Length: 92
Image 1 (cartoon, rainbow, N blue to C red):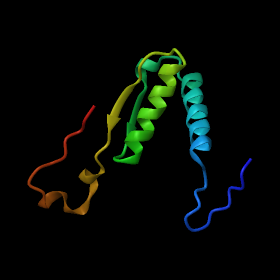
Image 2 (image 1 turned 60 degrees about the horizontal axis):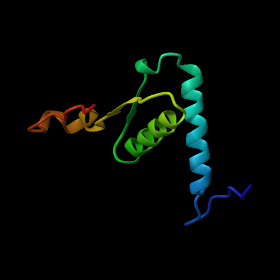
Image 3 (image 1 turned 180 degrees about the vertical axis):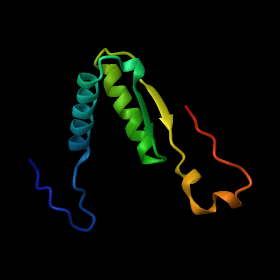
Image 4 (image 1 turned 90 degrees about the horizontal axis):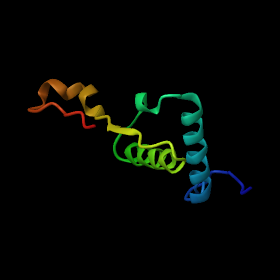
């Protein structure tokens, strides 16, 4: 296993380590949820949406069917919400 020491410009996990971690998380989701129709993977833009999508792909590759995906817009919790002309829309 590679050294996981974090220093400037050196990633804590390489691409393969991230892939393995996401695959393990996908297995955990499947093992702990008998009904995947009740599961929604929701991510915060931008990276969280990508991670949710990758987890859904791993679950689908396990032969467990599609998983619902969603996007959480955290801007609705900001202090300036009363000053905005439009409220954010939740996407599913």
